[in-house]
Image (cartoon, rainbow, N blue to C red; front, side, top):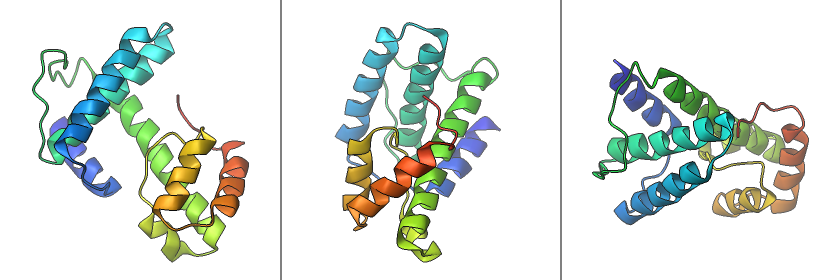
Length: 153
């Protein structure tokens, strides 16, 4: 059941496929950040990031086979999966709304499909460049949205 939900969720997000090495590199980074996490919220967030990379790689056809990847136990990890879906869906929607506001066009927002952390201005600039958006206006809109948008660490 959870696998079916994850498949549909990843399809809904519609993120671009990456090279197989991209998934391995992201997993390595996320596992390192998970090891460095101190607080309970940091550990939850970083664990959700690991689960996200593993599930996205599997969805995109590049399953990651490593000893360091946690076994798939849907009921035991329900909180992590719920947090992961909430966190990444919130980011995805944030960029869609920001693009629509910056371009004053709903059609522009349909092209923007991103889940990187919008709390970092550098990342916002990267998203604007990838999608041909006016970087100054897009960053201005994102800064305004961040004041009230529910972004999760």
